Amino acid sequence: MVYSSHSCIWAYFMLGRKVLLYILRRIKMFLWDWLKSLWSSLIKKFNEFINEVFTQSTKLLIAQFSDFANQVIAELAVTDLTDASKRLEAFKRIKDYAISQGKQLSDSLVNLLIELAVTRYKNLQTVVDPSGIIQ
Image 1 (tube, one colour):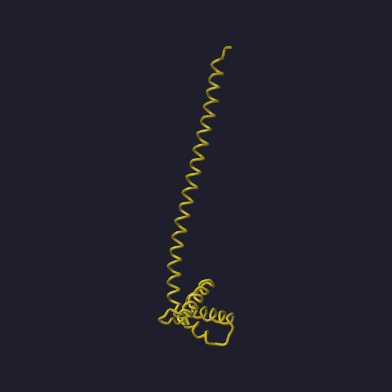
Image 2 (tube, one colour):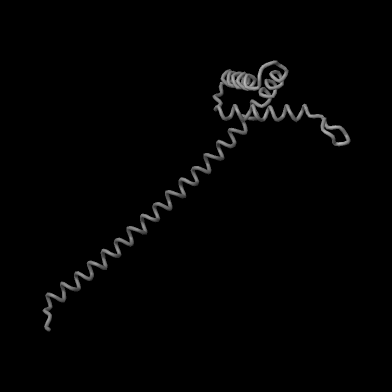
């Protein structure tokens, strides 16, 4: 069988086209994967930064309001209110105090302050004698 030069050129062109398209697809996939990786690493670094900032600011807020929360819990512990009522009253007082100080505390942070203050109050109320028996 005899091939014309035109058909050989056409065959090489089609083969070259397929190879070129394959190479372009691989480059596109590589670039897409690289961009996804870059974006993921940027998001990861941003989240680490935000978490660190929020962790530091949360620690500062806890330090700023823990004394007041401890005082509120100590005052409410000697009242005749139910535990749920004491918690609501402590929540309200701490929120109001924070607002009066120009701070806006999240509900979860106020609840954390209450839990820390209750734990501290209970630890202060537990008396351990020298023999190690908890009274």
